[in-house]
Length: 437
Image 1 (cartoon, rainbow, N blue to C red):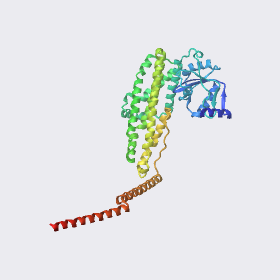
Image 2 (tube, one colour; image 1 turned 90 degrees about the horizontal axis):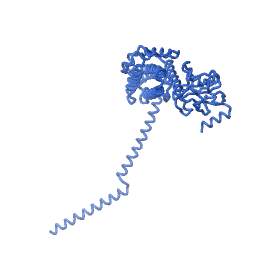
Image 3 (cartoon, rainbow, N blue to C red; image 1 turned 135 degrees about the vertical axis):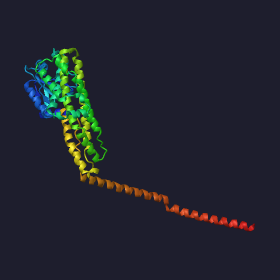
Image 4 (tube, one colour; image 1 turned 45 degrees about the horizontal axis):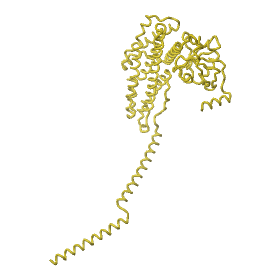
């Protein structure tokens, strides 16, 4: 209802723009291929970048766009369609999450000039309009673009740490990854050859076929090592112990370097998956759909695992690496926590950005100040004073009940006098009886 109201408000104020040109979209959970004529794509890219930030719209390699631009020529009123790849699942969700390879068109598209959001309802193109372009091949094109975009995004944000690789692999028991950077360079070269029109030979594929399993196992070992280091950060410990734990995780455990090497390994895995898809397309096309499903599942699992890891890292640093109000006097520990927290937080942010993860923001916790400690002490003193007053009042009430009211005291005295009189009378009677005897 609120979106409808906003839409109506924008239309009334003239803040939306109508676009007569159709856009053809092939969306999935990782991103979307968008096809249109040059003018339409310029407007779309500018709107999207303004709403989502620069870098989320990429230009695919020429080989990857051939299939979708041919499709665009059939559906659009242009002979020179342009294709772009948009990362993220927003367009897929707007189209009601269709199956991979589904073609979605936007007719008389209405977009918000302020956010770039598509406001018109998308339509699924009938299969008759896309002869010869099956869902499997379109899904293949979209997934290849997703793999390329993920690998390129990591590459643009990567810090080279070749001199530390052996130490990290040893710590993570991930020696199976072997020459990580050597494998990455080999895979990049193979992908560039394929994108340039070369055919992958049996010899080329046999030289890299076994890398897939090694990369999968190595990535899991690296991720497990990062999780293990997190488990050794005990938030309930004192500030001095927490500072030592964080220092050990960063220096001895090489947590930051582990995250960077994890990115390198994932980049290699995405390039390998892309080559695997090409191999199956050419040599075993009857298994292409099965291979596409397998590759999507791999991407999904790694994104979910990285999202959990990044969330755990942020929560741990927010809770573990700041001084509490009871620890403001631990200035040395505070300086150590800051020294190792800040660079590690930047590495975590880079990891999240490279993987385009949707993760909760930092809580922004800083060390408690002396002023906060004094305020907390004041509140605590007031609470203790109030509690003491309540205890004194409760004690007085109990004492009063033990002593009893005045009337009860008088009754006790009268009863005591009566008992004494009765006791005296009994004594006199006993003496009289003795005299008679």
